[in-house]
Image 1 (cartoon, helix red, strand yellow):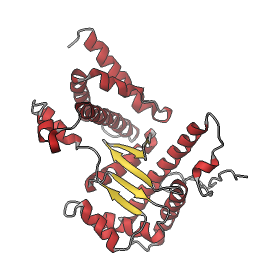
Image 2 (tube, one colour; image 1 turned 120 degrees about the vertical axis):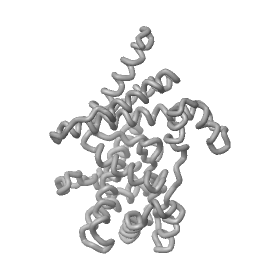
Image 3 (tube, helix red, strand yellow; image 1 turned 135 degrees about the vertical axis):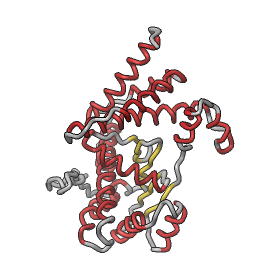
Image 4 (cartoon, one colour; image 1 turned 30 degrees about the vertical axis):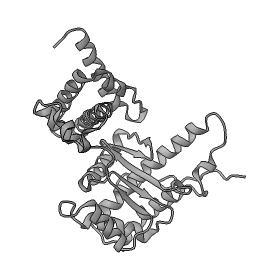
Length: 303
């Protein structure tokens, strides 16, 4: 008989981040009863644990910038990550992937709430600095592996070292169960340069091999524009809550990018309005309504 998952009764950490859901069985999939809704339940659990993994990884990285890898301050985030990885990677390694400024757990998109936006943005920024497309965690990873990983991640300068050199440093330090992946897609910034100078074909001409599927390029551009618009909304919300000065420059830039993309490929961009997440209602809903309003105005003949 399968025991039900147990959850930590502890409250949030001092920095406001929630404690992870503790799971104790060998495989998370074995917890879910078989049935028509089993897949949805499993996906929900994976999404919750994925968000916790991002949160605890962010705590570990930030703490490692202040304390050494043997410091007791790393105990809580390391223990939490170990618990999560043991559950998520019981059957096979789990991959936290960054693609077009969206975070995925494997192939599942991790949808953040407005409260989690700062955490997600911090991890995305850190991964982008190292040009990391994904981090694979295996169940063989131990406490010392995560401590050494975090130490090297923050102590080496991504401006002076490559991703390959970081991976080699991990191997030289004897880190097991943590592998780094290169990005799977071309940099969106590369395509944006082509749009900025008015030459829409320059991105394809300079892309490796020049054979990238145009539909995939369009999707990548659309997702990037959507992500920047959602981030702009999040920044406005955060600045307002903090009582700071609200600047609309970032929002204007994001909206202009959306307008340009809409004029090029309306169907692809409007397809993103299917993104639904009740925890991120403000951000997704605001961007979705903007997209639909722009498309309606365009169809009605407004400039």
